[in-house]
Length: 160
Image: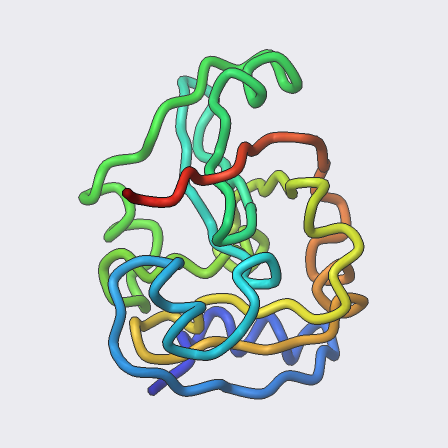
């Protein structure tokens, strides 16, 4: 388990205390929450979107999915998903698919889902598929200072 250098530098620069939480290797946020034994509603995941203005990270809980229609209505931007190649270029110090939701650490704008505004604790990808960063909700909101927020997600329907 490692923490991406960009994430670690950003946490230190912002004066945020954190702990690393190890878990078995997973490939999606729902399984990550289960493996790490953390509430899915407190696991912040980053979904990288793009349009002709550039990239933006939509930060939502693992229990929810980005609502592109809500993003368009809220911000007036016709955003779509970034490609795997674009993600590799943006997050060069991370394993493919392990996107930390800290846009500021990578020079990317972020948008925060309202459902994370009151979380007492927040967990997020450290930069690989085996570790999470754990911060207080207060510190997470400090890390997201300046990021607009809104109702930008919808609940994930459980598989049947």
